[in-house]
Every structure is written in C-alpha cells, then in structure tokens.
Length: 270
Image 1 (cartoon, rainbow, N blue to C red):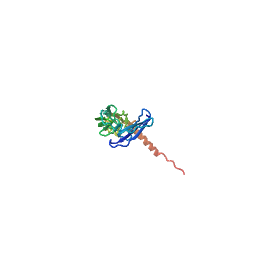
Image 2 (cartoon, rainbow, N blue to C red; image 1 turned 90 degrees about the vertical axis):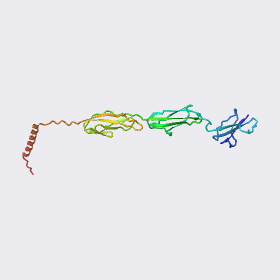
Image 3 (spheres, one colour; image 1 turned 60 degrees about the vertical axis):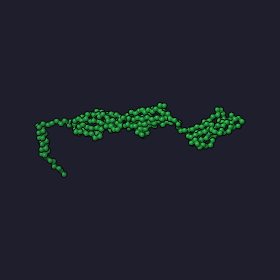
Image 4 (cartoon, one colour; image 1 turned 135 degrees about the vertical axis):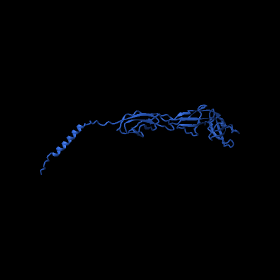
C-alpha cells in the first residue's frame, strides 16, 4: 500500500449533510491522521480509501465507515459532593471569600453572595450558594458567611502637669482601627476640649477620657482615662513694708520735692 486518504462530511442536525471533504493523506505506516472537528459541534461521518504501489485506488464505499456526534458536553452528568468552608471570618478591609471543596477534587464552580458574584468586604451575614459549572458534573451547596466586626484599642499615654498660664495643647491618642479618637474633660472649669485641643482655665484636676465608638465594621474601643493636673502660677515674691517704713518713705519723698522747689534758679544770659 502506497497511501491512505481520509474523508469526512458534516451535518449540524444529523439530517442534512454536506459534501465529502478530504482530511489528509497518509503515505507511510501506520497510515493514520488526526481530526479537529473543523465545523464545530455537530455530526460527522468518515471513510478512507487506499492506493497500492501500482497506483490502483479503492473506490469510495457506499456508506460511511465511522460516525461521531461531537457534542459541547456529555449527554450525562455525574453528581459531585460540594462543601463550603471559611464561613466565619473577621473584617480587616480585604474581601472575605468562602472556600469550595469538591469530590471529585478540583471541580470548577460558581459562588454567589446574596445572589451576587462580588466577594463581600464589610461585616455582616451573607447567603452563600455554590454550583458546579464543570461540564459532565452537577452539584450545589449553600450556607451563610458571617463576617464579624473587628476589635480595636486606643493608645493614650499619661499627661504631664501644666500651669494656669500654659498655652493650649493637642492630645495625641490614636485608635488601632485608624478611626478618629474623641476626648472629654470631667471638669470643664479646669480645662475644656475642642476636638483634640485642650484649653486650661483654672487650677485643679480633671480626667481626660479618650473614646472611639466604632462603626458597622469595627467594635467600640475600651475608653482610656488619664488625669490632668493644673497648678496655679505663683507671682514673684515682693517683701511687704511695715507702717513705719511706709511713713518714712513718704516723708523722704516729700522732703525731696520741697528741696527741689526751694532751689535758686539760674539766670539765663543772652
């Protein structure tokens, strides 16, 4: 045998067929070829003819020698076991996806959260549904994804003593969540607070409380309390004069004034 030629014809519905088309010619053993379904999904029939060393060729057979239905997926499905995991997580600003495990392992599937394919980020509860999408398999699972609010803590160190004439100063507390810390003064007659700026009013003691109430993603922080002591400024020490000293000083000033008035004036010469 010198060569073998392979032919196919195609039908989209298995009823109406096209013409026979040469696929390839094989001129050496084992006389085979590959086929890639050039017309896409549908029905294919095949035959081959051989040519010997003297050039004699077989005629085309009266009917196809082989047949195949090229379908986009098998006509059957296999039930797979589907399990959802990572359904309890805590907010940290990143997407919180549920995990998908299948038997047989590694099957592809689609997961939705409250009917949406977007993976949630914020704290809350989400209805999760998983469906196998791999051809030839079927399977589904459902559950609830719970994303808990995150905890936070406040850093707010001790406050030093200030005096009644100290300028206003800023408080430097912070929350681990990055949210803004609020402050209150227990004794507004000693010091008041606007935002994070303290204004001293009088001597005494007040406690400054730092709070952060959180939001839908972050739990409230435990308040931190620090004491602020305001001392009175002491004026310079001026010694007191007794009554006798005051009288002597008055007489001295009076005598100096009288002497100045009685002094002769010098005539100006032109």
